[in-house]
Structures are given as C-alpha cells and as structure tokens.
Length: 459
Figure 1 (tube, rainbow, N blue to C red):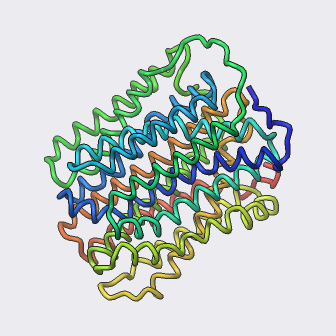
Figure 2: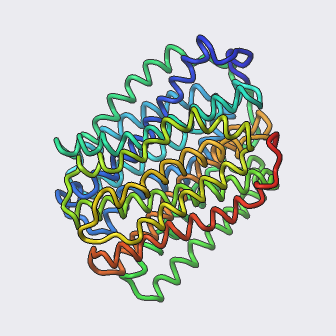
C-alpha cells in the first residue's frame, strides 16, 4: 500500500524520508567500496590467496544477489518499512561480527549473512521510493538522487577505506555499524507506518531463492577455480550450476507465488536495463579489483594513496543528481545510458597501457571517464527498470535490478580474479590481460544500449 508521502512533493517530511532511504543505499555502497581498498591488508593478516581473497567480496554480492528477489517479494507482502528496519538491524550485527574475524572463513560467513540482510533491506527501500512518488519527474528526481547517493557512497568508500585501513582494516567493518545505527534511528522515527498487508496465497518461494543462489555460487566458483582444478571438475560444476538455474526456472513456472513472475520479463525495457546493470557494475567492480592490486601490490602504494587516487571517480556523486536529470529530460534514458557505456569503454581502453612506473596523470583520464560513465548510466538504468511496473510489483522490479547489479559484481570480479590467477604472478602483463574483461563488458553494454537510441524522451 502506498505510504503517507505519496501525494507530497519533494519537500518537508518527504525529503527526510528520502534522506533515510538514501542513507541506506549510501551504507551499502560505502560498505562494498571500503572492502575493495582493504583487501590487500586483509590478505596479509589472514593469509588468503588471490582466489580466496575475492570471496570476501563475492560472498556478499552472491548472497545479496541470490536472495534479493525474495527480499523484494517480502517487501511487497510483509510491509516495506518492516523489512527495511528488521534487516538493517541484521546488517548492523553481522558487519560488526566481520570486524572481529580472525580466520578467513569467519569473515566470509559474516559477509555472506550481511549480503542476505542487504538483499532484504535494499529492495524495501527502493520500493518505498517508487510507491511514494508517481511516475514522471517526481519519481525520476527521487530515483536519480537515490542513485547519486549510491554512487557517492561507492566513491567516498574508496577514500574512507584507505583512511580506516591505515588505522586497522577491521574499521572498514566497524564504521558501517556506526552509520547503520544512525540510519536505524532515523528509520524508526521518520518512515511512515503502513496498513498491515493482507494474506497472500502461496507464501514465499524459498525453493526458488535457494536454487538461484546455489546456481550463482556454482557458476562463479567455476570461473574462479578454473585455473586451479582439472577441466573435468570445471565442466561438472558448470553443468551443475546450469541445471540449478534450469530448476529455478521450472520452480517459477509451477509455484503459486513465484519468486519472480516470469511474465515481468516480457518488458524489453526491463530486460535491457538489467543486462546493462550486470555489465556496468560487473565491469567497474572488476576494474576496481585490478586497480587496487596494481597500485598496492605492484606499485607499493599505501591504502590511503590508493583511496585518494581513485577518489576522482567520485565525480559521479556530483553529476548524478545534477547533470544527469537534465540530460535524461533532454535526450531520454536510452541515449544517456549509451553515452555512459561509451565513456566506460574509452576509460578502460585508456588504462591498458599501464606500466610498472606509470604516472598518476597518465591514469587520470581513465578515472575521470569512469566517473562520468557511472553518473550517466547508473540512475537511468534504475529508472528504466522500474518504469511501467505496477505498484504491487515494484518490490519485485527493484529486486530484479538489485540482483542484476550484484550478480554483475560477482561475475565481473570472478572473471577478473580468474584472469589474474591464470597469469600466476601479479605482473604488468597479467593486469593488462585482466583489463580486457571490463573493456569487453563495456563494449557489450554499448550493444545492449543501441536500441534505446531511437526511443523518444518520454519513453
């Protein structure tokens, strides 16, 4: 049911509610980003290999991506405010647990549960926004502010991660606890209570969530472990992952209340938006993994130097809520998304000539272009993925989009980690080979965005 701010413009209490929800997506963005900068320090203390190290991130994004559809449905069925607050508390608790980890498996477990919490919290927050403002300028403005805040969290997290890791990497877990506590206080005070949802037939599709998550885990593990295990084992795990994916589709066709109503995928705009989300975030997370290891382990830069070097990407936090809305109104979503992928492809291509003594000014054009790419593509993809969807399925649409973002993160990271592992050592040649992964992904994003060039601005 719509919240009490449905008819308000972006003033007064509605701005306060939006601030709380933006705080949650900022928390999610800064949490992931800080982790990326802290990875080398975590590896040094806990003795993790490169392939094991990427599971500190992948455990989070896989559980996030695997359960977010269930989270979206829970928000629609059980109440968006209730789901947002409950899982924010769980996020807070397990982020704190990660800070106390002394072994790799404990840290990975904490990240896995934190990802599940984010999977329920994030679509609840997004669907509060999409059901609080009607389609059009009001909703677009709210979504672009929301997306800009997410981008700001991701960008500022690289600097915050550098500062905190310079003290102790465990603070990249403890800092989100403090931020989550502040957001929780605001949510309890400001988020409007909803009329209790009625009963829904069929309940939750737990089988669908388990089969989807298991499929993703197996497919990504196949990519990560391919360089280290026999070909037969690689083939078998890939087949198992695909079979579980087929089982997920079969379950969705039969259950009374599917995790995802397959008919929603008939929307060409939604499908393109989600494929674009996979490629945009996957390419960027893979690039960040490469850049952090290159700067810290090959160039011996400190965590703080690395964070400050990558901070320029944070230009998106300024442009996303200011320039992007004007561009969307002037040229339409499709053209703005295409421009974002074009900037991304150019940015990755310009980073390919990296060397063992590359200067920062040589890196700078790529980093600026990636900031522009994110500011142009992220928000419009969010709008495209939720436009035209009924209010009753806004949580589902938000869940599908978040699944795409998180699966893209896991997939991009896994392919890049596999490429680096195959190179045996972290060398200039190995980093160049791995950089082809985000470059190809951005190129595919351009192809997917092509149909949107002919769409009118109103669409």
